Amino acid sequence: MSNQVEWAKRVAALAKTGLYYAANHYDEERYQRLLDVAADMLANAADSDLCRVKLILAADDGYITPKVDVRGAVFRDGKILLVREAVDGRWTLPGGWADVGDAPSEAVEREIREESGYEARAVKLLALEDRKVRHPPSPNEVYKVAFLCELLGGEARTSAETTAVAWFAEKELPPLSEGRVTEDQIRRWFRHWRQPNLPTEFD
View (cartoon, rainbow, N blue to C red):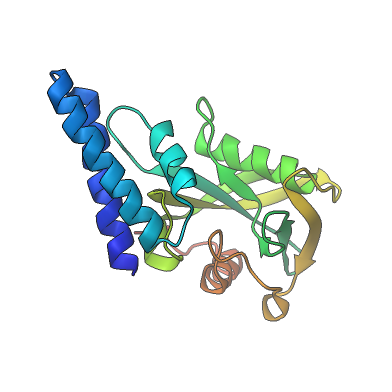
């Protein structure tokens, strides 16, 4: 099923790019029909709502490129900072979509502050990864950017997106929001925290 999601996303990207460069009304109609077919395929393959998929596709204009999801690994007393997502009630590293105008490090520092109440500074790029390699299928094509971050201060505070903030030992991880972070990723970030000279990971 994940292959079908990837095929549908590629068709949708080609259709959106075709719409952007269409030379006449006839080309626009053809690419729009192709986009509608891709939306149907994607909604079916990803077990997602068709209207939601169409809204996601409509939000992207021009040449289609991956979105950027930033995540921050913050440690204190041998434990990692996690927040509980309001959407699914599961836990993840603080983070989210990078905003236009933010450098990636600024984006992750902002997300940590907004979602957890803590202040942190990005000190190392841990990984730049293609979301589809390690996560469940998604309508979006996403690059995930993980940073090791130094705790500067602040105190636990929830937000509109989070319902709890806590620190967890590596062997005591709670149920994770696997569309956002996996157990394997968290264990790798623990290794990077313990061994700062490990190289950045990619793909």
